[in-house]
Image (tube, rainbow, N blue to C red):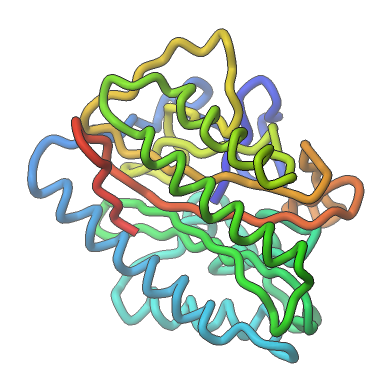
Length: 275
C-alpha cells in the first residue's frame, strides 16, 4: 500500500490517512530490537506474500476483482491476520486491486471484470500480533501487448535494482536513482508522487522511500529499519491523481502502470526480505 510523499499529500488523500510520522505523533518508526521482531515480521510477511501469490494465481480473463479480494480475505482470516487498509483507514476492500491506468488503491468490485490484455496490480498489507507488512505485484491478464510485458519486466527489475542499494549506511537516494535508471533504460516513466515507506508497527511510517533521485535528500539508511520499496513505472505518466471514488490513484492520461513491492529489514549486508 503506497504512500504519498509529504508536501504532496493532503491530510486525507484518497480516503487514506496516508500521512507519515511527521504528521501523526501516535505512529512510531519501526526499528528491530531483537530476534522476536524479525520473527514477528517474517510471520506477517509470509502471510501477505501467500495472499498475494494466491490471488495472482487466479488472475484470468472473466475473473472479477471482488473474487480476487475474497481469496486474499480467506488467506488472511485463516492465519488470524487483519487487513491493514481496513484496520488503518476503513478501506472498502480487504486488499487493493488496480487495473491498467488505475495504479494504486483500487477498490475490489464485482463489476470490475478482468479482460484479456489487462494489467492488474494486487497490493496486500496486513497486521498480526502488532506487526505489519506490505507487498504488491502486477500480473498480466492472459496475453498482453509487448509493451505491457516489457513494463512488467522493467518494474520488477527496478525493484531488484533498488533492493541491491538497500544497505545500512548507504544513501537513501541510491534507491530512487536505481529505479530511475532502470525506467529510463527500458523506455518507461517513474510516478514521482508515489513512494515506499517505513512499516512494521503501523502500515505507513517514516522514512519515506522515494522512487526518484532527490538532490536535497541526504538521509542514510540505518541498520534495523523496516521499509518498503515499491517502484511505480508507467508508459507515459509521471504523476498519479485521485479518481472520483476518493480512493483509487490513476494516471491522468490513461497510460498503464505497474508496481512491485517488498517489505524488508535493512542490514549491513543484503536486506532481509520478509514478503
